Image 1 (tube, one colour):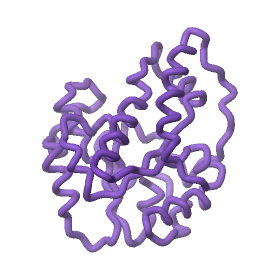
Image 2 (cartoon, one colour):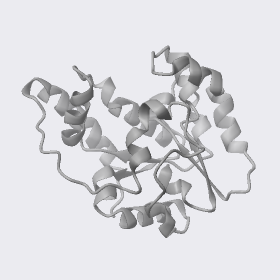
Image 3 (cartoon, one colour):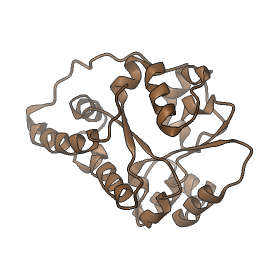
Image 4 (tube, helix red, strand yellow):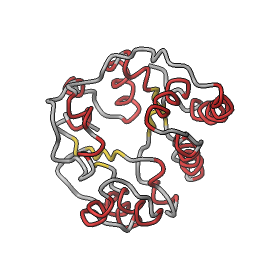
Length: 221
């Protein structure tokens, strides 16, 4: 989102379905009541509004979370182009285990991503995917590939940004965006060097099966 926000032809929107997700799921996230008060909670109206929005910007970029698209008609996705950011479970699981004492398959987000991809395919809007490792290894090359698939020109301004919050940040930024607010661009990729614990190897296999399904849509960079 911060990368696309640097484009002069683009308006970015931060997780427009977050309040809808909190209302439907009842999830106890930090800042729950503040988020519900700050945003529309009807996901259908949100998606229809995005599809019909008239603005000066040529490009509308909505950063979404797959699990936020819940109890909504898949047809709402038809007006948009979609791409997903993927991370190898071998790298992702150790990171999650630093935050959560116990990680479930649902915590990884992979089932929601596969469900979303299946829904997009069903309405003829199959997405493409980009590997986070590829993005970090060569941001310009990856961004050029993304822009080409979206049929927009690459803008070198997408590679860097000023540290600190942006006006488009959701009200949840103070709980979740500390690292991105310190960044000025994409951080170099380094192998984590952490192994998946033995008691999570079965979960790793489940994750890899879903990850491979998503990799079918990955683009080469």
